[in-house]
Length: 170
Image (tube, rainbow, N blue to C red; front, side):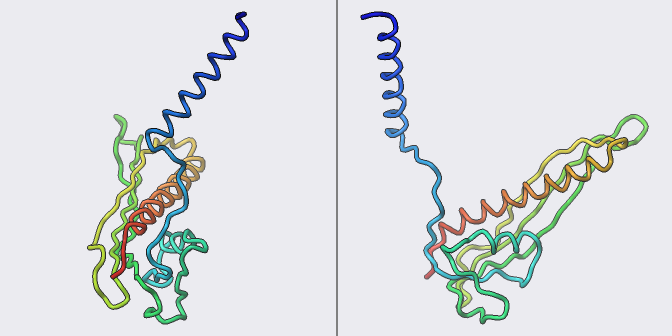
């Protein structure tokens, strides 16, 4: 066996072992969520930016009840109790100028059935990011702040979708 064929053989063996190991551990790519309900309402209507993104995230898997429709048509109701954005000073320099902020989004929600039975008690999810600040680049830092808030909002919606996938209406 020459050196080249030995390398090809080792490469194929390594690939096979890696594929076998990944399938043996239960690894699979994340698929779309499977929900135990086919319709839901997100309250309040219209709600903040997080509620709006949540409505858009279901796609065709779940019918989201529109504001003009009766809430009783929904199998479950997601109530956004609080959606709060915070910007906190974390550090300052020796002359008292801000050097770093912490951005937070707090989401408090609960899930109930259309009949009013509580399926998920009020829960709070918090996302936070640190951002440095430089007074000579204020516009760039404001744009970065907007992007970080949008990223945190998307993360919160994904966490909420995973929690809703575990909900089983009664």
